[in-house]
Amino acid sequence: MTTAPTTNPLTELDHATCQRLLNSHSIGRLAISNGHNIDLFAVRYVIENGNIYFQTKAGDNFTSIVVTRKVAFEIDEARTPSVRQVTVYGTAKWFPDDVDIAPELKDEARVASNEHMHWVELIPEKISGRELKLPLSGGLPVQ
Image (cartoon, rainbow, N blue to C red):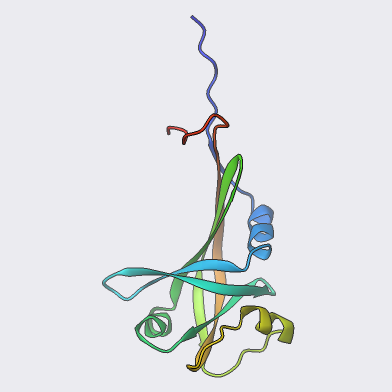
């Protein structure tokens, strides 16, 4: 009895592919720790000179960014027949009023709010990505 060779459905993405995916999206998830829990927040973002920019309001989560400064950021792209994910680990720097990025980028990332919003710059230290190939017959592959 002959067994068909199996291939690993999970592959690492190279740096260029990770950068291309980050540049082609505008919504991501920010992961921050307050020392007790890890929270995830959806953010609207832009990239300029390799750094990620988004806005947030003051509060407990904003304080976590200011105090710990270490964050993770993630995007997903689900397209048949695969799901790709990119994670950025880095240091967050906050700006109390404004940030020096191109005006059109500010408009793309700006959050409409009645509250005062702060800009955050995420300076990447490590970027990694993975692609999960999905079987065409349905269901997730077993690992």
